[in-house]
Image 1 (cartoon, rainbow, N blue to C red):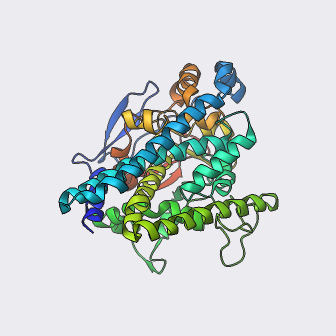
Image 2: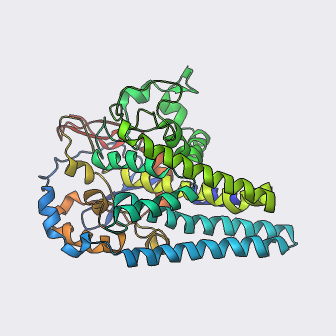
Length: 423
């Protein structure tokens, strides 16, 4: 249990509240302007005209749209080798450490580092799902299915819903991920689904915010897979029915079209194969060692996944759009590039640093995304959002960005309530 406690302590360190409670407003050149938390509302100026998608596409060098199978496979081999070496070292050498404190520390370090390595593999499978791994659809799907199945991720199910998230990013009704609450929804929230409480008073309690954030990071991914949480009210393919109507594991779920059901079934087979392998591992190494070997990295991976997605789409400067005023370009630009230093660039394949261009053109492979980003920045101007922060903004973002309200200065746009001054 000591290693689990140490892992939890490390997790608390990553999510600790800042001593100076403030947020950042990103400018077009990437600089961040500090905004005091006490300044809960600010004037917003109307947005400039949005460029059309072809103008942006034509600004990007043509080779950026041509993924190389060999380059992508080189990264794949690198990540698999890293993951395998870590697992071999852990199961071979950590059991030999007799000192209980060093033993716990070794498993804690392993879980964290293996979580980083497996997140890299997750992102390569994500490239496969977008068709950015190679020009060969079958190769993309075989590799993506295998890699995601190994991580207990339902590849095709995620691929279908994630594609709709990209198709309708920033749409208050049709987006599939991290659609913010409206003021009415925020006010009508109930504690444990039963008791109606003052949302602001209740959620402002630090211990409540911390528990909610830990739940968000540890179990947000599973809630998304099983219950399709944070999706828009008009994001489903049909009216939900049955006992499990919005699960990513049910081929008949309302998330999917009838033509996608076979692929969801194939996805489930991959998950079952991995589950069987994990069970077999428990018969060799024991259940606790298998949890440390696979389970702890699993939670780290999906902590990073939730943090990456959440912080790419949740920032004081980012708008959402009502159904009448949304366009694909507006939605794609309602994202933000962040920075996670060495880890982001080298282990997470730059997904944190180049998310804006990824939403505009998801088939651009990650190793060309920097070049593509620089090509469109002059066209986007103030419409390009960047913020040189990442995980340290998880706490202030979670506690400040609670719900959105209409912005009287920009028709059809919804902004975070603490940043909007309604006329």
